[in-house]
Length: 382
Image 1 (cartoon, rainbow, N blue to C red):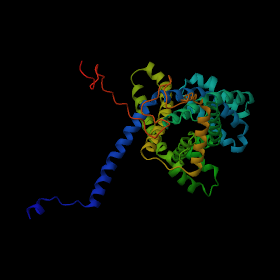
Image 2 (cartoon, helix red, strand yellow):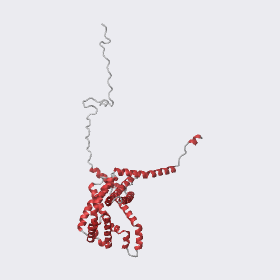
Image 3 (cartoon, helix red, strand yellow):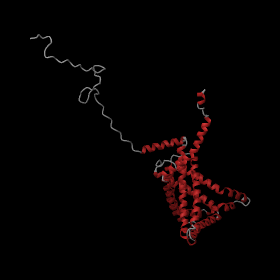
């Protein structure tokens, strides 16, 4: 009776499973964040973001010139009101970054000339410069994403640069279409519809304009995370990193705005430099957010690997075969020379323990003979 009272009661299996699941859920997010930070720090997170930011800044002026030149040729597609809205938005933004003399004497006449008439030489030269610098920025993002997933070097270096150029050209095409829509804004966009629909369109635009832009950016980032990898993951695997990148970008933008509004009150000299500093930090935070999202997706893939499809397995095997064929073959070692007679040593003496030809077993060693006496036993005494 005492043993029965002292014996431990068995625990309920459902309760144990619930406790293990709760502990796993509590440890899972912390482990995920820790692994993301370790991978990002080991992969030179800030260096990769700074490299991408540099190429973004370098590609921005020729890109804007090329986009303005293309809008001058397709002005009839969007209408004169759209071109006027783009012109006003550019001048208003330039007034916040440059002095009034620079805006009035240089920027405004140039923008008016390009938008009104279209300049083929600006379009050609601007796009060539933007393709070189912009593809370098896209190549930096592609390299950072492949490094985060430990797939750097799987794709050929020349093809990876060409692939980054193709991605940049596709993004340019989307930007040419989306720039007029972004320039219009929620105030001007309802005016493009008939008067009977404007009230309803204005309601929906005010409610979903900015959320729709955020969703489109998240979808574009998820597509970038998928397309950049040579060994592609399912498309939905890029959504967590894209959402995290959007959150990091929004938080950094809010912090940057608070910092600039505070630093401008410290003095006129530093306040004049606040705009270019803010622009550089803004571009750096864009690169930082995209790279952090890539490392976050890589950490999720390590902790919870995705199942490969049949097509992906075939492609992975083909890539591994290509990599194996590209590596030099190991040198073959010379074969040892066989012993012509395994029963004898090189000097002709029989090996010990090797059966002879007369029998299956080795001959027993000879018994030592008794020493001879100097006199025979049966010899008579003298």
